[in-house]
Amino acid sequence: MRRHRTDWLSLLAGLLFVGVGVRYVSGPGPAPEAMIPILIIGLGLAGFIGVLTKAFRKR
Image (spheres, rainbow, N blue to C red):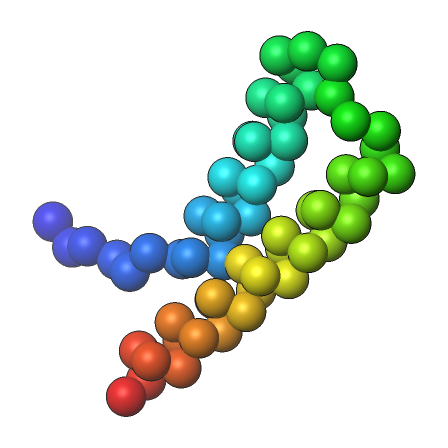
């Protein structure tokens, strides 16, 4: 069996959206105006980590 490397960008983005979904299903969530910046910042951090891991893999 051949193993592949973890795609950190996809993993972190998926966890972010699952976390937001669970938050809204479990009870009254915060206003959507407050969640949009959180999602944008979270995706930005996930992208930054994805870029860093690719840079370190090439070494």
